[in-house]
Length: 112
Length: 112
Image (cartoon, rainbow over all chains, first blue to last red; front, top):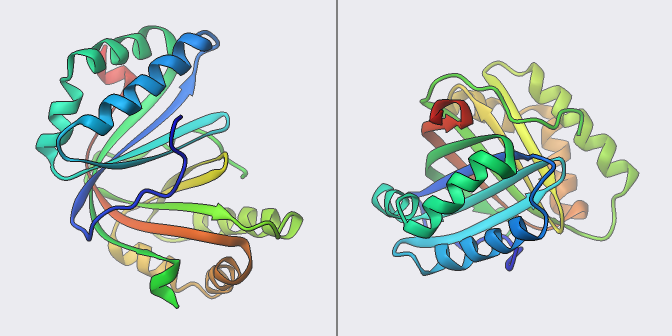
């Protein structure tokens, strides 16, 4: 992934998409390239606010969005549709996508 | 972490707490023990539904809950309060906690 930091997001409410996945044992270089491309593409979408990503056995990617409409547009993006299809058919053995309304947030600085 | 799988959660709506963190360069064994203890304790809480966790540079832990009340009770749990204090003072250089309402979810199986 090209970015690996805590996302800087506006005051709630905003939306989060939690994507949790197990990789199948194929993919490698092709998968990494596509994942990086999807991050770049997502960043160009209207309503994109940021993302966070980590993988051990389990991979968790959270992307943040201004609205459900922005999430819907990104889901229907042509290149993203191809990536989703390859994800289902080749790269992931299992995944779960959760669409969430972020109601409240706080960081270390707010706790003093 | 003792569990490392995609959480099996009920039909939405339910709640998610996304905890994203950067580790400071101290902690080690003590941190791992406390983290494992917190997972065990969380699992005993009323309203706990599951959790998912992955760490590279960035750590992401998502826990799932039946209600805001369940999240509040867990946040105020005595042993958890001590762990939170140690997290702020020793283990994390930065973190962000996001409280979210999961409105919709789907997995690979729902997509056919």
